[in-house]
Length: 555
Image (cartoon, rainbow, N blue to C red; front, side, top):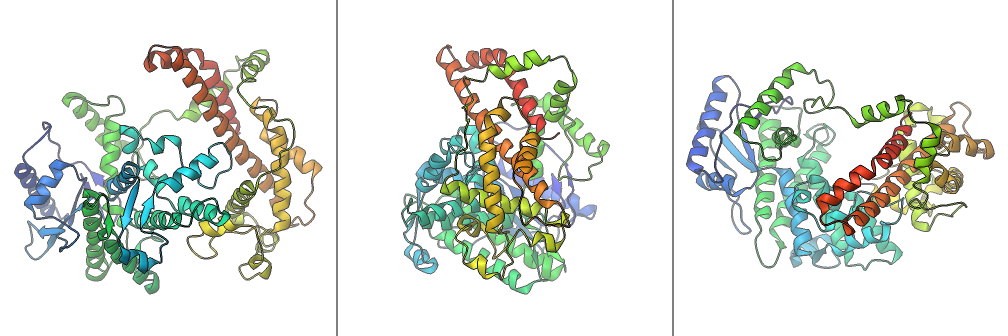
């Protein structure tokens, strides 16, 4: 597949049917042929991107592509068309990111050299998965979480879970690093966990740069200070990778990290200095488009045969021209969205109120009943403060500056510096003062809304009320004294807040019920497949009920 650097386009140009292994010399010759044919129509190929499978590494060795702890990085060969140009070869950064997470989950610890520990002022010389697991175990029963992306299956991933980038993205995330530091500040985690937080933040920054698709994260000379800072980070990152030790072995992903990072540095020099690009997006150096193509091909059959593959590829290639895509990175799959199914259920009008009540009653034993206000814990308070700041950020453009500043602190406000709230929000700021800090008076008002929501949650989940009803009831009983006069932003914030909390509760309870039903089904059946079939048949009404609840979030 060919992909564009100046604009985002893609085109399948060749495919081959192979056995489990193939000749590296033949593959290399075909790649050179494609590079020459591309040049003949005016398309210059600068870099070949692939994963680090053994067959791909075989043609790398023929080109002398290599990188080790103590040695020079060889990441290019002579260009087949122009002997004065370089043809770079690099591994896919997304695959590398997944390999790092999988290795950490498998080996439990990475060790760092004393040089890195001293340079970055780290409390210990090892990166451990235990602090991340502690955060998940602590917050698994909570609806409001400081690291909401963490899931149970991530700590014991299946073969297919290891292939999912979301697993790595949740583990090696800036939110995860902030959560670790937050629990360290509370005294729940030892100071040694600080090394793990630093490692998560560093890997997340590298991944964000290497997959950047927006000029804000792209490399550019428009801001010389940020440009030099980014180059220094990438150069230092190479040094960090060289000083990682795992069971006294050099891992393949370390070779990949060195090659990918050095290629990014070399190509930015080519495009920004020699080709005079305004900015350079490293996100163009991934094989996301190719992986998405494989996903669509396999959507009907996990292991398609030659005929199935050819037919699917033809249809997918044609759809690129038949569909006009305005927004989005890839072509449409033309499949019905789940919301279409939700609308169909709502519009059928064949479900009587008595039947709906009966379906709701079926959940009385599954959904925890909550009949009184429950005060949020200190962790909930921090998560609520961060959530309110996010809501305010989404509504900033819908009000004037005067009204907005009645609800949030200015950056230079002394009261903000003395504010004891917002520790988690400060830790999640990857840049200084990039997030909003709500005023304490307004936050206390939202805390009352949270308590009111908790008191009515069982009515919402049992389809007795809607989140709009709860919002209006709260606004009718509780007025914010310092409400802005120009724009009714407070009412909008309460509506969005209650809707968001309803979504969190629905997701939490749905996961709880799903796990309970599957566990009970498996225990009384001979196999998981038979249990799943029986469960799917018996729980059709449950699915429809939760689809209706989900649809209400958008109406």
